[in-house]
Length: 606
Ligand SMILES: *[C@@H]1O[C@H](CO)[C@@H](O)[C@H](O)[C@H]1NC(C)=O
Ligand SMILES: *[C@@H]1O[C@H](CO)[C@@H](O)[C@H](O)[C@H]1NC(C)=O
Image (cartoon, rainbow, N blue to C red):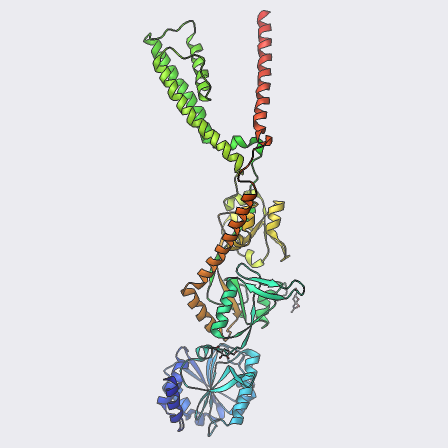
C-alpha cells in the first residue's frame, strides 16, 4: 500500500507540486511542531514568496508561523537558530556550502530547505554534492532532521542507508512519518558506541592478561542486546571508564561517563544513573526511567553477646520479671490461705510465730518454684493442692528457660543493632561513600537537625577501587552508603555471615535511567523501545531472574556450610562458663554467711 502510494506521488510530482500533494508530503513532518520560523531571502523576497512550498507553509500548514528575512551571504553568530523549527528558502550552492544559515549546530531542530532556484530535479552530481555536505553535518553534530524541498519532490538524508560501504545517502521522502521515527526502524548496522561499567546490573568481565573488556553480563546488558536487535545497530562496547559515573573537578570539567558524554566520546551509556541533577543538563539527557532503587546505610553488625553471659540473655527481661513477681504473688496467696486456716482453727500454729511461718512459706514457694522437692507438706489439704498448681506453673517456666538456653547456645545472640537514622547518629560512626553523586543530597541538611548532623559525618573515599563494605565488616569503625540492590545482590555474603547490618530506614529513593548526549538522534527511538520493554514487564522479569540466581547460589553455599558444621553444634566446656561463675559466686556468699554467723555468735557469747 505504501509502495503504491509513493509510486502515485512520484507520478503526480512530475508536474509542479500542488497543495493536495504537499499536504500528503508535509503534513506528517510538521504535525508535532508547535511553531515554525520562515526565512525568506531579503533580495529575492517576492520571488521566494511566490514559491509553491512557501505558499503552502503560509496558507495550508495551519501552524503559527513567524516570517523573517535574511541574506545568504550573511555571517551568522555561533548558534544561528537554537532549537527552533525552521523553513528556509535557499539556493543549492549555499546549502551544500555548509556555511551561514546552512550550518546549524543543534540536533533538536527540524529544517525545511526550499531550493527555490532549481528549475528541475537534482541531477546525480548535485545529489552527490548535497549528500556529502549532509554527511559532514552528521559527522560534526549528528544533525539529520532536514528536508530538501525541490521542484520535483522532497529529499532527505538517511544517515543509515549505505552508499557503497559508507553510511549516509540522499533518498526521496514520501511523507509517511517524521524522520525521528522513519529513520530508526532499522539503522542497518550503524555502529553505536556503548559505554557500560561495573554497577548493580552491569557486570563487565576482563581479560586477565590484557585488562581488556571481554564480555558483559547483567540486566543492563540484556537491555543493550534488546536495543541492538530492535534498532539493528552494531554495538561498539567501549572499554569501561575507570572513573565510573564521573565527578566534577574544580575547573568544572567532568571525568567518567558524564565526561565522555559531554565530549562526544560515547553514544549511549547503558549503565543506570540516578535521575537527579548532575549540573550538565545542556549536554546530557536521561532515557525513560527503567528501574528504581534505594540508597541505604550499612553498619557493622552489633557484636555477639559473649558466651560467658549468654544464658542471662536467653530470655527477655519480661519473663524474668514475670518469674520473680509471680513467685512472690503465689507466696502471698499461700500465706493468706495459712492465715484463714489458722483463723478457722483448721490447723494450729505449733510453736512458730506468725512471721516465722511467713518466712517459711516464702522459702517453700521458691523451693517449689525452682523445682526442688519440699521436705514436708503442710497439714491443710487446700494448701497442698495450691502447691500442686505451683509445681505445674514452675514446670512451664522451667521449660521456657531450658529451651531458650538450648537455642542460644546454638544460634548466637547479638546486642541491639542500629535501626534508625537517629541511632546511627548517636553511634557516632562516620558514613563513607564512593561516588559523589550518592552523597550530595543523601542527607539534606536543611530538612532537620538530625540530617544536618549526619551530613557532617559523610566522608568521601576517593579510591573507586576500595572495598568499603569489606572495611566496614573488618574494622567496624565506620558505616557505608550503598544501593540496596547492590547489598542484596553483590554483598549478601556479608549480611549472611552477619558481618554487616543494613539499617532498615533508608534515607533516599531514586529512579534510575540510562543517559546519552542531549538531543541524540536515537533518543526517541530508544525511549520508545524501553517503554515497550517496560510495559511488557521484561525488565522486571530480568531483575527477578538475577535475584533468584543470587538466592539459589547463596542457599547452596549456606547448605554446604551447614553440611560442613555448625547446625549440629557440640557444646563445649566454654559454654559452661556461667555455671562456674555461679558456683564461685555461691561459694563466696557462703563464706560471707559463715563469717557473719561466726562473729554474731561470738558477740552473743560475750
Ligand atoms: C540489519 O543490518 C544489517 C547490516 O548490518 C542488514 O543486512 C540487515 O538487513 C538489517 N536488518 C535486519 C532486519 O536485520
Ligand atoms: C580540569 O582539571 C582536570 C583535573 O582535575 C584536568 O584533567 C583537565 O585537563 C582540566 N581541564 C581544563 C579545561 O583545565
